[in-house]
Amino acid sequence: MTNNGLLTGKVVLITGASRGIGEAAARLFSQEGATVVLAARGIDALDRLVAEIRTEGGTADAVAVDLGDRASIRAALGRVEELHGRLDGAFNNGAVVQQPGPVHETSDETIDEQFEVNFRGHWTAMTAEAALMRKNGGGAIVNTSSIGSRRANPVLPAYGAMKRALNSLTESAAVTWGREGIRVNGITPGGTATAMIDQWEAATPGVTAQITASTPAGRMAEPREVAEVAAWLLSDRASMVNGAIVPVDGGAGA
Image (cartoon, rainbow, N blue to C red; front, side):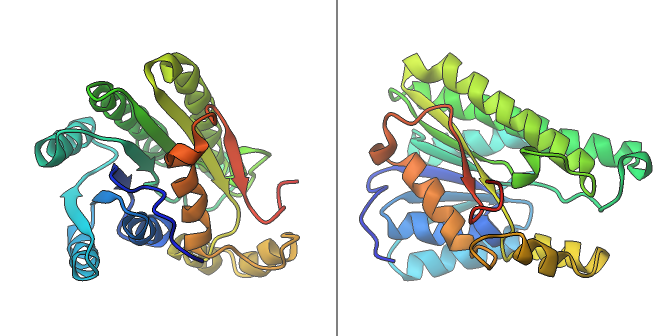
């Protein structure tokens, strides 16, 4: 894949940037010309990634964020403003994994954690991101949802429910903020070769083979392939795309 300068001159925040899709996005967005601010709880991993991006000639900074803590999220956006004075794009990719299990075995603690991180954390982040974007005439937000938000999700019911709620929030924000020059879209990745899938496989042996078999592409996505879609949605090339929930699943959700 070639780099086309899709994000040249843009300041982009990435949550969940320490691994998986977020880590791939950090590298890709920088290669596409963005100044990136990487956010996650694992600050050591972020520091290593920042050093790598800087060595390759990119501009990157790291900020610690706990998506379950609203004050932490707002502080992270405050740090973006301190560093760059503006925000042009945000890739809200951070999430917490649910321990697999049916509805009746899902604990109250699991439901609370899924709500706090995978739904409320995005709401808080989007609101703070939009406030900063307004100061410079707008921007673009992309939220990572899941193929599991589009249909019944009996193995990860709380995760699927919060991701479906995130789709609705994404669409509502797109309609609300569109006239202010702020576009909001979502992506729904299918099976992607990340640590999350490894954890799921360890808890439910055979799930990787099942996902692969159900994907018309015949394989899982690589994290960079998902990040490529987010990069386009954040770019000016997608200037009339607003309120879309874009599948990135190799046809698995068709």
